[in-house]
Image (cartoon, rainbow, N blue to C red; front, top):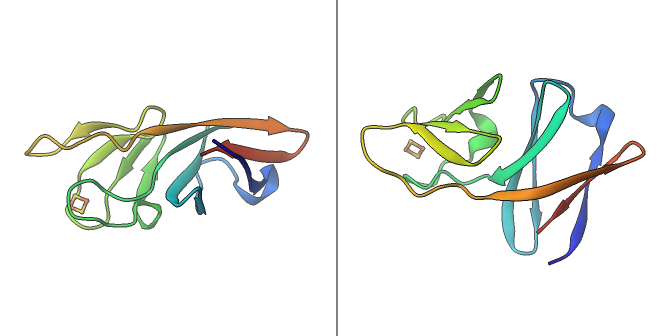
Length: 102
Ligand code: FES
């Protein structure tokens, strides 16, 4: 598992998201009320890139079919069928730099 730079804290204001590829994984990083969270960026329903979705507080809505995810855990909040978790990654902030372990 490698520690990879996501960017500067100023790059991701509150309520915003970004995405990176690290360790061969597509990872979404979001700022929820000043805290950073990282989950898988690919919807486990049909493969949408979730950074194109809508973030409201900790709830992320998939842009394709509207599944809703808890960005703080990567777990599904709502969808008509059961979907696999997005998974989550450890985030650390050192100074003004955000890192993810992937
Ligand atoms: S691809 Fe996300 S809900 Fe279908």
